[in-house]
Image (cartoon, rainbow over all chains, first blue to last red; front, side, top):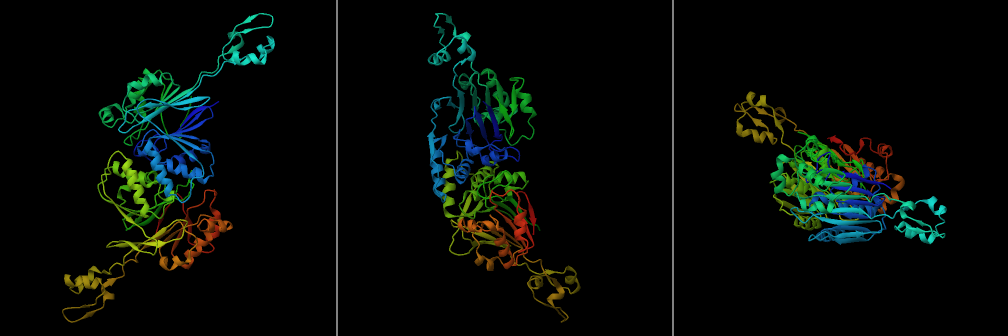
Length: 303
Length: 303
C-alpha cells in the first residue's frame, strides 16, 4: 500500500508563477484525500496527472482565500465529468453557505450529493472514523478559526504465518483470535505462543497537516511521532516578529515543533511570495530538525 | 502605442494541464483590460509577467465558472498588494451579490473601492465612454445571459506637420481648427488646404471578444471591420449538433463570422477539453477565413 503526499501548492496568500496557493493531495493507503483547495488546484491535479475523480473527501482548514478559492471550480468540474458519488467536505460552517450561494448561481444542478461537515474550533475532534483510519482536527491559532488535520491508520491485526496453520492444524475459527493476539492450544494439548504463530503488522502510518498557525507548542502532544508532518513556515527567523503579528510560523519554529514532536519527516511550505530562493529555509530548519524538506509544487513525498 | 492581446486561458469549462479557463489581458493603447477571469487567472498574469496592478477595468461576459471563478482571488491579491485605486468591474448583476458575500467572509476589508456596473442583455450598450476609447457590449446567445465586448479607439485628430507651422506662420490659436480639418488662410491672403498642412492619423484600432455563444449572424454588423476578433470555437464541425445544443460554435462557423464581418484577424479559442491537437481547427477555419490563429495560453497577438 502506498502512502504519499503530493504538494499541489506551496505558496501563500499571493501566489507566484511557480508556487500555487495551498493544496495537498494525499494518497493514504489508496484512500485519496484533498487538504485545502487554493485557486488553481484542479489545474494542478491535471498537471501532475492525479486522478482527482478518486477524491471523496476534501478538508478545508480555514476561510482565507488561498486555502479554498479553488473549491467551487473543482466541484463544478467533477460535475461536468459526470460524478455520481457523494463528495464529503469538512470545513468552517460559513463555507457551506458560500457553496450553496455559488451553486445557486450555476445554471444546472450538481448531479452528486455534497455531504458537508462543519468543523468546530473549541477542541480537537475525530471527524472521520473509518474501518481503516481516522481523521482528527488539530486546533491551530490563526487570525481566523483554523484547523489542521491528522490522518491516522488504525492498528492492524498481527499477520498469521501461513505454514504454522498447517503445522499445528489450526482450525479456521481460531484464526481471528490468533490474529487478535491469542495463543493456541493444539488438539494434542500443546501450548503455542502467539509470538510463534504471527508476525508484527506494519506500523500504522500517520500524516499531520498544520497550516496556517502561529508557533503553538500545545499541538506537539497530539502530533507526536507522526510519520510525516507538514508545517507552515511562511517566514525566515529574521521576520519572526512579522510571523507573530500575522499568526504565522518561521522555518526554525516549524523545525522546533517537528523535533519536540519526534516526527519522522518534516516538510515546510506556505512560503511568503517575498522569497525567490529557499536554501535559507533549509539552512534554518535542518540544524534543528535534520529530516526537513522544502515543499515545491508537484513534489511527491512517500512516507 | 501598443495594441496587443495576451491569451491567459484558451480552454473551456474543464481546464486541462495546458489550457486554463477563459481570460484575456488586453493592452489597448497602454490602457490595460482584463476580459473574463477564469480560475487561475492571477497565476497566469504572474506567469506571463503582466503587471496586473495596472488593470483598472475587468469585464465578465457571463456567470459560467470558467469565466469568473478567478475573480475573487484576483480581488484579494490586489488588496494584499496594497491597491488603493478603484477597480471597475462590469458583469452580470448577480456577480455583485456573490462578490459582496465573498468579501464579507474575508477577515479584512478590501482597501480599495470596487465600482460595479451591472450589464443588461436586452440590447448592446456603450458601457465605457472614455476620451480615447469606448467599450460596448455585444449581445450573444448562450445558455445563460452572455455579453461580448468591443473595444474601439476613438477617431483621432489629423496630425499637423510641424514645418508647415513655421513656413506659413500659423498662429497657435489656429492649430486646433487645422487638426480638426480646417483649411488655413495666411496673413497675406494665401489659401492653404488642410491636406497640405496635415497627415492622416493612424486608423483607430478595435478588438471584439465573443465568448460564449451559439453561431449568431446578427452580431456581424456590429463587429464589422474590427482589427482583431476573438470568437469561441469550442468544437469542430463534426460536432456541430452538440455545439448547437450547448450554445457553442464550431471553428468553421467562427471563421464564417470573421469572413462576413470582414475583420482583419481572427483568433479562436475556448476549446473543449476532448481535443489534444488543434491542427484540425485551423484546417477547418483557414479555408473560410485565412488569417485565423489558434489561441494558446501565453500567446501574444499584436494588432
